Length: 283
Image (cartoon, rainbow, N blue to C red; front, side):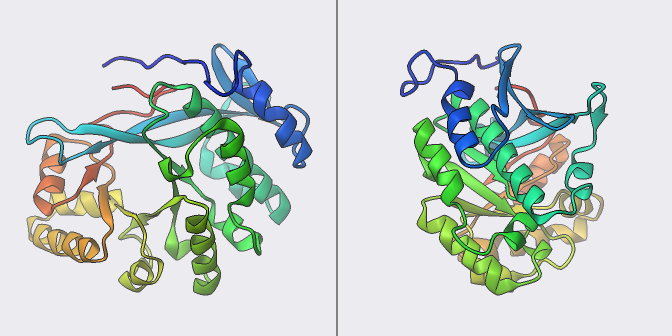
């Protein structure tokens, strides 16, 4: 496996990405210079927290019968407090009660991830980014306009950015549909994340018409433990394909699970068996 090193931005000259983005972010209401270069990577600062990016590869199962082919990566955040201690990422938004601060953090993290990815050799591949459900609930209109401005500044094509949404985490279907339609108008791809957990349902798939559906790792784990569920998994994948969604199997942790994903007809796969989250995308 080979680490992918940073390359200069063609549109930013010799200036680091943080130097390019910080004036824009400050003008849009962020703290002064929220992005900093540290040890060859970009970190984000907010109060006593330091955020960094890691990327987990997503592989195509259609490349060959033997070896999955790299198609993109999902960005994930790592958090440290003022003393340098790691903080579980779910606690980040759980600690926030202000709608304004929730939106701020969600936007800051996406800016951090695209800044790091833009510098990698894989910036021409699909980047998957999570959109916090509370962000969708707290932004009433103009979804994606801020982020579209950031991508334009970096010279990134929004068609190579897929926004991941946990569809059952948003109570108002009309608000969810409005947000998805707006994102799509701006050129972003859409993925439904963690499908198969909680109150996930096919009606949301038919309503939102996502480009990708990510099958929850718990569903993949149950298919491993219960062979009788594998035909049902394949039927679910067939239904999603009829809706023109490409299917990503999450949580692939063994060769057996990878085989199950293939047999079910999944298009892509992601998990520790294929690649762990790394500071730079690793092949």
